[in-house]
Image (cartoon, rainbow, N blue to C red; front, side):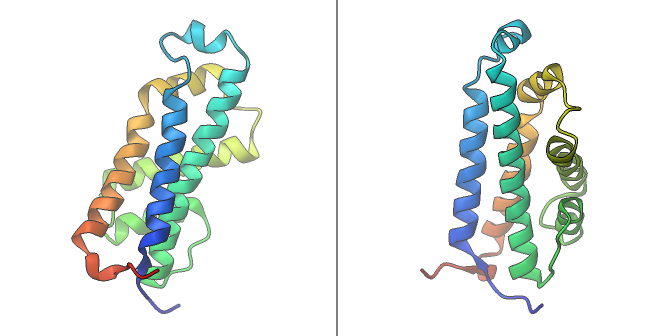
Length: 152
């Protein structure tokens, strides 16, 4: 693949999607674990919103690798690793994104494993990690405007 410019429209759409999913997660009743678990729909909604936020973030990374670096990366964990190797995100954020990709894979392929309590813990303690990685990606793009295609 030949590197080209990264489509700003795709970046904006994916970033908005990730933020929308995080917003939905934050609207769930998360004040206490008891409140969260009192309705069986809350963990199901949390799982869906979390998975879709992670997929949006990783798909954004895949777009950057494909268009900006000419790399066709399929596996989500590799997306995280390659973003860190290219300096789009820091090494620690790359490691966190690898872990997020692994968790996304658990949600999809081992859907019976994640517990309701685990989802509550993630929603109350780790959503900032998702936002942090997104912010790093967007900051890198702001530092490299020459890599962006802003045409319609």
